[in-house]
Each structure stands twice: as structure tokens, then as C-alpha cells.
Amino acid sequence: MPSSAGPSIDTITEGGRVTQVGEGQDADESAPPVMTFGAPTAGEILAERYELVEHINNDSAGRLVWRGVDVVLRRPVAVVLRYPGGDSATEMLQAAVAASRVIHPNLVGVYDAIDEGERAYVVREWVDGQSLRETVTEGPLDPARSTAIGAAVASALAAVHATGMVHGNVHPGTVMISDDGRVVLADARTDGDDSQESDVRAVGGVLYFALTGHWPHTEAPLRGATAGHGRAAIPDAVRDANGVLAAPRQVRAGVPAYLDDLTMDLLDAEIAPPSSDVLAAELARLDVPADEHFLDNTGPLRFAAETGEEPSPLAAAGGRKVAVGIAGLLAVALVGLLIGISVLGGGDDKDSQTNPVAAPTSSAPPGDAAEPAAVGPIKISKAQIIDPEGDRTEVKDADKVFDGDENEGWETQTYRRAANFGNLKKGMGIWIDLGAERNVKSVQVVLSAQGASAQIFSGTRAYPSTRAGDAQLVADYLKRPVGPAFEEHDGTTMTFPGFNAEQKYRYLLFWITELPESDGGYKLGVQEIKVQGS
Image (cartoon, rainbow, N blue to C red; front, side):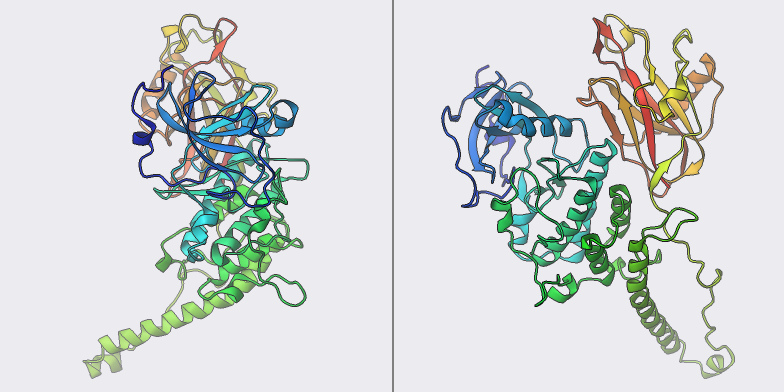
């Protein structure tokens, strides 16, 4: 396809600074040499679709990073090329394919992964902006911004971990900040040494780096294919004479105690870290305007244990360290309030004598302040298939979508002619009942194939499982969408995180509008629906 078709790439990406992989604009001197035989050139079109426009940099593994454009969809892309392809590119391609199945606003989108033998390349979302590593070269970030970045990274990892995968490459070079403020995690690169726990500990490393400008190498080792190359050039954390890591508050002033404690607990090998979804929920709770942090009435950061269990080590440590500081701050605030009331009311001596300021009271017994509930799996109480325009032959097997077995599920019939149920129906869905009103964090739906279009909706009541009841339910629920829809989704897992934290939910509808191709027709299976919340 001619490269002159449509708007130019300069128009599409005007004004962008970029770090697409690894270490920034220039590779570190310790990066391995780049193989240049058959090297790409500007203007070359890969796979008859992706035009190479400008060589941006080489990452620390020696891979070539190019700015390009998808000449079919006319959108900017990043193209990461490796020479040679074949077996040596297997890890890169497998990581890209796995990442493409997870769609999340804080993950870089992966569009394509191609092996041509002599070379292999991954095509992914182009991000105008810079890496966290480059951002911090101008100086450590303030606590509020550091918290927001940590929350975004933890949220991205929660989506990855919900699929059973590991990212394996979380560090300041793969945390990217776009020009519009969006934080995204790029460059998944797992190997046999990686685990979900190491991903979570790396969030502690990201927080430490954002607050201090240093990376705690020993506590959060750099993993993946480029470990030991350019990434190790990130300055190590400050340590005492015994090699003990200095806390962020010892490195710089102005770091709140709760954030200091959280960061150090995540890096402490003696303390079991929380799951990524619990960490994401806690950091999101703390991601508020800076002037609201210190009098937050929800109390110090805790990782709540399940009912009947001992508090987690992180909960106990965080609570002990933060409680004294919070109590002191509240005492200062209370004294100031009493002084202010006294001054404002001092004009009438008689009233001040006969109506002294009453001592503050509490409607709750001491020690009964509610702690934020931990985020975890929510059990689905009931499910039913919603088919307002069908003959009711497809409304069985609803219980298979929440039985814990992804190998079995519910599936549609095979439809002919068109993806929208053969032009016979506006859609079909699965209604779920959580048994009681709950705070929902996300819904994850595991599908049998790529290419489906679907969305989540909420409702306030149940309807009879009849054709008329289904029609009433759809008319009611479609008025209340939860987040955006997935259109022709290029993965087999859909994660819907757009729930209102101030609202409780009981009834939800997963509504399917288009089916993927299957055996000469169109068909979809829903293997499992998982709900996270409290």
C-alpha cells in the first residue's frame, strides 16, 4: 500500500516526545551489539501494513525501536525489531502474544507479533511521552504523584495477574507517562525466575525510585531478558555502612509516614506482600489531592486479613507505624479547632461563661472505626442466560460460567451470514446475581475466542427467566452501562474495571453484541466470569 495514502505520520504524532522501550532515547553503553544485516530502512513497509518512519533508539537488549504508522488504520505505532527471528525471538513473541490478551488503560496495547525468520518484530501502541526514568532525572516526584503512578502500575499488574500471567519487567524504564498524564506499563518480558510476587515487590521499587531517584536493586532485582545490561545503570538506593536500605524519609524530606512504610514493607523480604489487586485498591484509595492525605478519615493504610485470620504482617506493621503519627496530627487539628472557636466566640463574656465549648464526642465506641475491606473474589450466587429474541434453546448451562472451571462454559449456537447473531438478534447476555449489594472493583470474563464485542451493565432488580422477562431486563439494564464496551476484542479475556467506588452492585449483565468467526459461521463460548471487590 503506498505510504502517501492518508494523513502523514508527522500530523498524527505532532509534538511527541517518546520512550518506547527500556532506557530512553539512547541505549546504555553496556547494551549488547545490534545485528544490522538486513537492517530496516525508513519507508519500508512490514507485513504489507506497518510503515517504518524513524529509528528512535535501541533498547538494552539490542532490539531496534522504530516509530511507524499502520497504513491500514492510519494510526501511529511503535515497532520493536529483533535480529534474528526464529527460536531466539520466541520469548519476545510469546510475551507479546500474552500481553495482547489483556486490555487495560494502564497497559500498552500490543497489536501484532510477527516472525519472518531472519527477523521478528512486535507492533504496539505508540505513546507520546517519556519513561519514569527520564521524568525523575529532573528530580524526585512529590508523594501525591508517586502514589498515583504506583496505583496505575499496580492496577495494570492486577489485570495481568488476573489472567494467571506475570509481567516480569517492572522498572522505571517500562513505566511510561504520556503527555496527557496517562501512566502505562510496557514491555512484558517473563522468564522462569519471575513471579507475581516479584511483580508486586517491583511496585515498591517504582515507588522508591519515584520518591528518591534511586532503585533498590537488592530488594527488587531487575529481571527479564535485559537484566544485567543497561537497566542496572539506574543508581542503587542509599544504604548505611551495613548495607541496609535507607527509607525514603531518610533520603528526602516531605515523604508521609504511610507512604514510607508501604514502600519499605513491599521491599522487605520478611513481609509477605499483598496481591496486586489489593495493593491497587489501597493505592487508589490514597490517590487523592495532596491537601487531603493527612486527615483522611479512613485511617492508616492496612492490608486487611480475611475474617477469622490473623492480620497480615504488612497490616500489622503499617498500622503500628502510622497510628501514632495520625493520632498526633488529629490532636493538633483538634487543638486548633478549639482555639479558633474560642477566639471567634470571645466577644460575649457572659455566653462564654455559661455555654462553654462542649468536649467532642463520638457516636462509635473507641477502637470501632471501620477499616477498608480487602479486595478479593466475590462469589456469584446465581446466573441466567438472557435471550429476549431467541427460542429459549440457548438458555441452559448458565451455572458453568461461575463453577471455577475455565475448560467448561456456556456457548451460543453457530450463526450464519453476520457476526451480529446472523442479523436475527440485537444480542444475548449473561445475568449474574452477587447475592447481596457489594463494592465491585472489576469483572473479568474469559471467552473461548477472540473477536467478540460486549459490555457490562448494571441493574437494581431481577426479572423472570422468560422471553418477556428477558426483554424487560435488557430494556432496564442497558440504561446503566459500566465503563466502555469492547469492540471486536483481540483477546480472550475482557476485564471491566469501570465501577463506581461510591456505589454498590448486586445485579450485573454481560451483554454480547457481536460473535467471532467459528467453523464457517459465528459463535462464542463464555468459559468463566470472575468478580473482584469487597
